[in-house]
Length: 129
Image 1 (cartoon, rainbow, N blue to C red):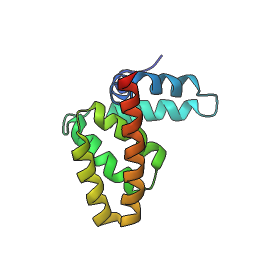
Image 2: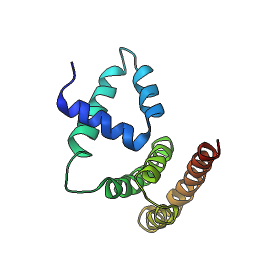
Image 3: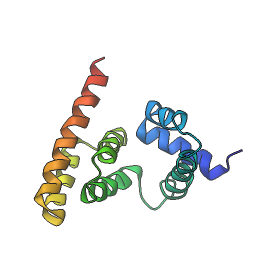
Image 4: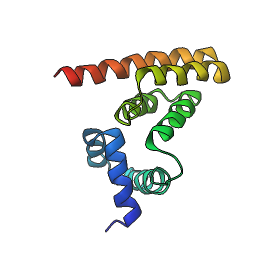
């Protein structure tokens, strides 16, 4: 039913965001939100994240900066967890968020650091269990 870009996008989305999150997103989709889930999976993950020009780590770095600048805390937490899965260190994430403070404003950095600490605590709790 789904095309190759959707299938590749689903694999990358799952790799970066985690199987639990992706499954929950797809299972919770209803008639209204299903088209959005399909669009995100195919277009964002299948067409863009699957391109060879940047590594998954580099794409995560860009996403952290942009999502911080856009003040989207829920998406930021999700992508911080994804950045950790993609191999970024907490120090690299800190440096990205410091740069956000310079170019997007200190309030954006303060909120982003708060969200990062929450994401790190959740990642640590999963590792400990």
